[in-house]
Every structure is written in C-alpha cells, then in structure tokens.
Image (cartoon, rainbow, N blue to C red):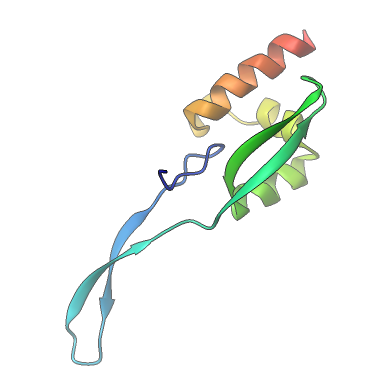
Length: 93
C-alpha cells in the first residue's frame, strides 16, 4: 500500500540522518496517515479514505468532506479526491 494521502496527495519524502561525526545515512519522512470514514451528506454515505492528519484537520476546519472538496482547487487534490469531488458536485447540482 503506497504511503500517500488520498485527499491532498501528500507522500513520502527522502532525507538524511546526520550523526555527531557528520556521517549521513538515508532515511524517509512518511506522512502520518490514518484510515478514516468521512461522512458525505451529498452522496448520503460514508467514504473510507487513507488521509494524513493535516488533511483531516483541514476537512474539519471547512466543516466536512463536501465543503472541503468544493472549496479546494482540483490542481491541489489527489486523483482519488478529484473523482470524489466530481461525484459530490454532480449530486449537489
């Protein structure tokens, strides 16, 4: 299972650990991903997503999944979120 957020597309990044002796060893910075069920009132069901905790805070700030998807630009969303946004938009109109 890939380590990327299904809403924002945030993914693993590469970096290095630096010891006191200044030796550098490779490491990965993984996003904090959680499996969550988010309620979509437009679709009338819950959606199971793998979301970063940062994206989850943003969804709560916007007042729910539907409001978050409508407010976000499609260029900033992951492909899964773009498909979900189009389904929500179609259900609302």
